[in-house]
Structures are given as C-alpha cells and as structure tokens.
Length: 574
Ligand SMILES: *[C@@H]1O[C@H](CO)[C@@H](O)[C@H](O)[C@H]1NC(C)=O
Ligand SMILES: *[C@@H]1O[C@H](CO)[C@@H](O)[C@H](O)[C@H]1NC(C)=O
Ligand SMILES: *[C@@H]1O[C@H](CO)[C@@H](O)[C@H](O)[C@H]1NC(C)=O
Ligand SMILES: *[C@@H]1O[C@H](CO)[C@@H](O)[C@H](O)[C@H]1NC(C)=O
Image 1 (tube, helix red, strand yellow):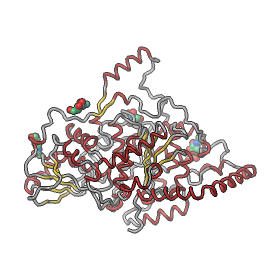
Image 2 (cartoon, protein in one colour):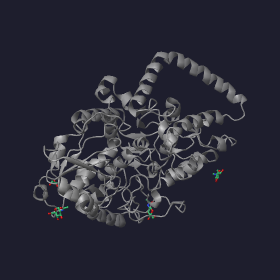
Image 3 (tube, protein in one colour):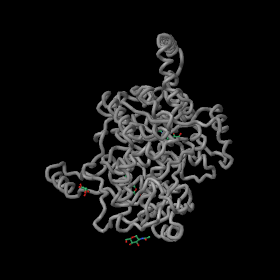
Image 4 (spheres, protein in one colour):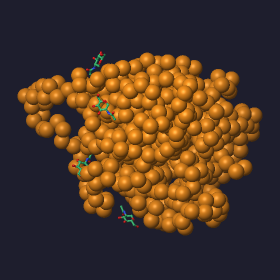
C-alpha cells in the first residue's frame, strides 16, 4: 500500500531536514522564541494559572489535573534538573558481578560429524523484522541438531513489511557462523544438487518429540525439507544442551558483518566521546503501531480520526477500547512518558540519550517533550553523516543492526515496547553481565501517568521507582523458565556462588548488619491485580506469540494478540 511507512528512512528525513531547517532559520527562530518568551513573561502576571502554560498539552493527564495549584502536578517544568536521590549506582546492576554467561556444551554433547545423518537437509524460511528472523535462525540450528540433519544457511525474509533485499551474508558473517558451529551442527551455504525440496510448516512451540514425530519421517523419505514461516516454531523449554546451543548461536555464532560492526562501533565511540555514560532508547511510536494498539494518546479528535483511518485498513481489527487497553498495560509509553520515567529513576537532565526509532507519529511535536527532558538527544542521523550511512540507509535490516549494536553497548537500555528487538536485547544484556535494561511496567505506569496531575514530583518519582522494581534487568528479576527463552536465557546464566557467599560473609562480619540483599525500599504496592501465573511457558498452545508474562512482568505486550493480517503481524515483529 502506498501509505506504508518504512521505519528507518523516515526518521532520517525528519531529523536531517529539520536540522537543515533549523540551521537556515536559526536566527529567525531565536528572535521568535525571544518574543514568545517575553509574551509569556507578561502573560504570567496576568493569567491565573501559569503552570498550565508549560504543561504539555499532549499528555494523557491534562484533563484530570488542570485545576490544581501551581505547586502540585507533574509537568516537564516541575522536574528537578538533577536526578533524585538513589542509593545505588544507576549505571550498573547490583550484584551483576556474580553472574556470567555460560553456554559451553556438556561433555555428553556428541560432535556433529558423528551424529549428522547423510543426505538429510533442513531449510527454513524466516519471517518478520531482523530480530524475529534472528530467533528463527537460532531455533533452526537447534531443530537441525534435534533431527541430526544438515542445516542450509537460512534465507532472510525479503518480502516482509520491512522490505529489505539483504541476504544472510550481508547482515551476518556467514563463514564465522558455519565454522563456529561446526561441532554442533553441520551447516552448508546451499542445498547440494539432488533432493527436491518438500515444504511444510510445524506448529508453534514444537518441542523435541514434536520434531521427531512430524518432521523426521518427511526428511527421511524426501531428504530435504523447508519449514515455512519459521517464527517461534521451537518450544521455549528444551533439554539443557539444546538451550546452551541456542545461546551459542545467539551470543557467539551470529556476528554482524564487518561493515555493520565497524559503523556500529563508530556510533558507540561518538556517543562515548560526548559523555562517559549514555542511555539508548528503542522507541516504537509509528502511526501503524499506535493504531494497532487501540490506545488514546491525548491528541484529541485529530488523533482519533488519523489512527482510526489506519485501523480501517485492517479488516480483522476489532473496535478499540482505549481505557481497557491502558488498564491492561497495552499502550506503549509516549516519548514524554519515557522521559518522565527515566528522570524519576534518577537520570538527570544532562544525560546523553541515543534514540533508535522509526517514523514517530507526529514527528517533532511528539518528540519535543522528551528533548526538553533530555536535551542531549541523539540518533544515528545526528551523530553520523548521510554519506557514512549511505550503504545502510536503503536497508531496514542493516539500519536495525546498527541500532542493535548501539543499544547493546549502551550503559542503560530502555524500551517503550515489548517487540522482538526489546526481548532479544534484554536477554543478551542479561547474558553479558546484566547491564541495566529498563522495560516499562506499563500497566502500573499508565495509571500513574493518568494521575500525575495531582501529585508532586517527589510522590510521582517515588511511585515510578517502586513500580519499576522487577523491570530493571537485575539478576533474579525473572525466574528461570519465564518468558521467552530469547528474553530470559536462564539456562545460560551461571552464578558464581562462592564469590557471593564470601562477600556476604564479609558484609555480615564487617558490614552494617543489614541483609545486603534486602530491598532498599519496601514495595508499597502488591501486584494483586495481576493475572495468575502460568508455570510452563509452553502450555499456551499455538496462539501467536501468546506468552503469559510472570505476575510482575505484565508489561505492554501487543504481540499477545493474534491477528489474521500477515502484514500486521510483520509490522509488529521487528
Ligand atoms: C567455554 O569453552 C571455552 C573454549 O573451550 C573456554 O575457553 C571457556 O573457559 C569455557 N567457559 C566456561 C564458562 O566454562
Ligand atoms: C540423533 O542422534 C542422537 C545421538 O546418536 C540420538 O540419541 C538421537 O536419537 C538421534 N535423533 C534422531 C531424531 O535421529
Ligand atoms: C489523584 O487522583 C486520583 C484519581 O483522580 C486518585 O486515585 C489519587 O489517589 C490522587 N492522588 C493524590 C496524590 O491525591
Ligand atoms: C516477582 O513476583 C514473585 C511472586 O509473584 C516474587 O517472589 C518476586 O520476588 C517478584 N520479583 C520482583 C523482582 O519483584
């Protein structure tokens, strides 16, 4: 469809053109701003409630809060410039030094050349955005291992919503991939001449037995099988050596090609040159996504009309119920809300923030409050030149890979969504030392944002901090087996318990006498309204990505909704 937005070029256009504009019109803008400021100053003596002028109109709460005293009510202007008092280091996770990624095979794991059966080939067709395709590639290696067959290097999905003509070898180092996994699974670049390919599809979350029952007989008979639409086709729970194999694929074998790695490193270097620490935000706020969420973002009739028109494109979407969606935590935080949350968590105004996003609904207007909260606002288009990005910008997957690298390397990673990139990075950052990863507790925060007009900044920030407990990427935040494996690779995270025991003993001997692991503040809010727990993540059946979150991880999950629109599914699968 003609009005389809592709994420990366759009932000590019928006930002570069606005930069050019602002350079050209800077003198004019400065004087206009000066005049406006003067007007505001004069008005502030005449108008009864000056605080409302700075209160940003697009926030959800503007309706409930406007009649309050100027000293009450959280607005951008009321946020203190320096971060609040936090006892812990906001740039690292407590106790992370006691954990490490462990994905080596056990001694029982037989070498691939012994178990691989001749003349049996597995192929897969990946689907969705780069990160969903990545989960498919990882699962394909494990599936080939279950079946004792040779894997053919997966073809990337070039026809999805994200439209990218790149091949596997344009994104990932193909020779490294094959050689690194040579003891685990035999992998070939192409299917050898001979067998004709049989195409089939396996159910979602198929486990070892399921592959042996459904795929093995076909491979034995026909020799080459291609599994179509290979997204989330492998169970979350597998035996330990297969889980470790998944981690080896994800964290070691899948390496971006050097042009991507080099450019990614350059972006990270430029961020580091500006400040010691930085936050990376993966923001999804495209019109399509907002329309799908069915939420209301405070933009009045104009917004209802615009998003409503987009919704009509998809016939199977039901009518929206914005209040319910918000109660269920299904509304992505707005850029302003992300900014307020971060400031509440103690990140001060001078912190540098790298924003990875596609097209943002209403562009600059939507981003303005976040830029006021964090004026050191960057994206790859502001820290790299058009020429430097030239070989990437026509390819959504390569652009996504660059953002992946910067987000991965950031000191603190924050998302406003629960898509595949957010999940894979959350898992990856756990594996590589529990780097702080903030995922909004949307259900709780949505309520807080609604009421922010009648509380002080101190109340607001203390509540926000308490709601975010359990959503910060700390060790032990999520129990093993919870969530998707790519998000919570618990089997591949080991604890150095001796070191920890020694530290604890020292603390008891010389410390304050307090339990070092006791939470610093008590949670004032018990998750009574959260849904019941499911102990087995694989019992949900074949519903699209239907994954029940742990009781205290009920965050935004638009993927929990099955949709019959393949295009819509792709758009959600970043
Ligand atoms: C995993 O194996 C590699 C190579 O054999 C070795 O260097 C490394 O120490 C092992 N890691 C762990 C955690 O055992
Ligand atoms: C794969 O090989 C292993 C080791 O020989 C064997 O235990 C397993 O049953 C084989 N699986 C299939 C599906 O052939
Ligand atoms: C703010 O208002 C909401 C509902 O209008 C109420 O639930 C909440 O308790 C109020 N908060 C404060 C701090 O007064
Ligand atoms: C999550 O919830 C479980 C029980 O519902 C609780 O034991 C655990 O401590 C909670 N985790 C966090 C980080 O709050």
